Amino acid sequence: MAKHDCIIFTGPSLSWSEVASIDKRPRCCAPAVRGDISSAAEAGARLIGLIDGVFYNRAAVSHREIIHAVRSGVTVVGGSSMGALRASELDGFGMIGVGKIYACFKQGLIEADDEVAVAYNPVTFAPVSDPLVNIRLALHSLVQTGVVDTGTSDALLGLARSTFYLERSIPLLLSIAEQRALVTKQGRIGIETFLATHDYDLKKRDAKLVVQAVIKLDNQLR
Image (cartoon, rainbow, N blue to C red; front, side, top):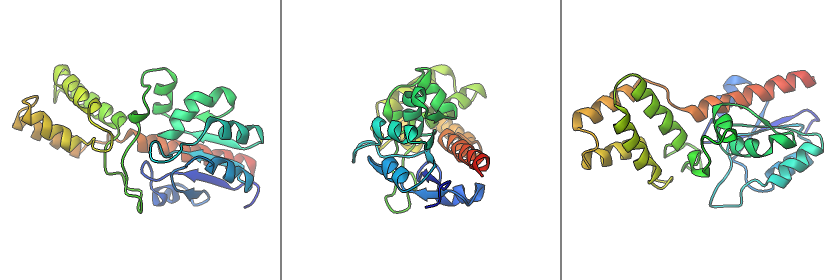
């Protein structure tokens, strides 16, 4: 691995093909597990973008390995998912945080790991559930445009928060909400119609910012 090679750990938040569509230089790796940042640094990577990482089924990326990588001269940029969480905790140690989700964690507006956690296909890394941060943005947009009122939004958010992250999805939430008379059938259709034509994937937006930040830093090192 060349001295200035850059590595990006991503998967459900931003696919490898989407990274390549921004720039083909970064080497994409699967969502990071504990030890991956250390291994990348020891292999010679000088720029690491941390987007996705495991949360529950394996040991997560540790604070210590990121701090050690930064102190050894590696630039570590985080955002969107695990990267946003770790950057909010470690920016004081030199990790660089980017994006809205990082800022929300940093400001204490959100705190729980499951705000960004999703279930995903282990082969393709495609997400099969919706992260709570995306659901929050969807609900905000629905209120701002008058599709739902704040009471309905609050009820839907409460339902989302009480649903296990592996099962959390907007279609499921709307189905349960209709069954519980939180929304009418017509109201559900109105929500689905609105969301079908609006982008509420905040994690993907922030993941792209991580890639762009890594590329900008790589250009500066050349």
